[in-house]
Length: 135
Image (cartoon, rainbow, N blue to C red; front, side, top):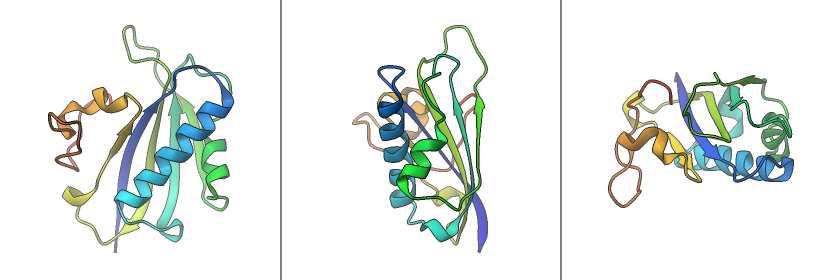
């Protein structure tokens, strides 16, 4: 069994706690489903939010999802001029038998633009495991 990192991001339409909780819960759910990971395999999760998100901690959406015994850490993204707004990013460290190239990183609700290299013309996830700076 190896330790792998699964990346993901989602965008909010507004700085509203309920939307953040829903978006983060949806994102972690999809990350776990697409990578066939159970809650017992999750080691820890790092969450970041862009500086314009002040309504709630993104970790609350993870707790609502039911991952109550997983260590979580929230941080603020760098405030880069021209960067995509209202973005929550997740990096989950998990135990899995998957090779690094088999890991499916998940980008939802407009965050797909952060990792266009992972998606084909139809918006479907293509290659996995490749990483780009700043995503």
